[in-house]
Amino acid sequence: MTAGKLKLVSSPLISVFGSSRIAEPSEAFEQAYELGTALARAGFAVATGGYSGVMEAVSRGASEAGATVFGVVARALPGKPNPWVRRVIEVDTWEQRLFQLITVGDGYVACPGATGTLVELAVAWEMMSKGLLDRRPLVALGEFWRPILEPIEAADAKTRGWVALAESVPAALEILQRLIPPQEH
Image (cartoon, rainbow, N blue to C red; front, side):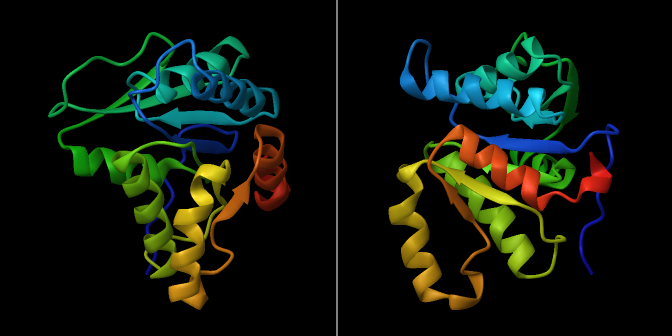
């Protein structure tokens, strides 16, 4: 049995995974801002972990372009939601935050990041692979992910193709638009 989909908005919602340690100005921050803007302009709502770095850049781009922006935050973590989050989903623990961010998404984009981002990508991938979550588009943004994805797919052939590698924001957007059923738009 798969986890049910929590519907927060009428438009499809994309959960974006990314590092809190990325600062403005940087290429990674600009790419995340571009991603948020592109998602909003394509009619997607956005959810992030709600804090700084990539999460703030995506939230800002999406908010400025008119999208509904959710921030999933945990009481157990320090910090406050970034100023671009319009709707806060507050949970108690880091683990609840992780699962909530995965559960609310109709699709996912993993930006380059560190261990937290890797965990988010891996848990979403594993939940779908094990049938604990309905299969949804899962996009890894950038060549950063290739040396991580290829050995995993080689070790477990049944997971091949579950994560789409997108070299750019437009490529990631094209994948999401192609894989999310039109009736959800």
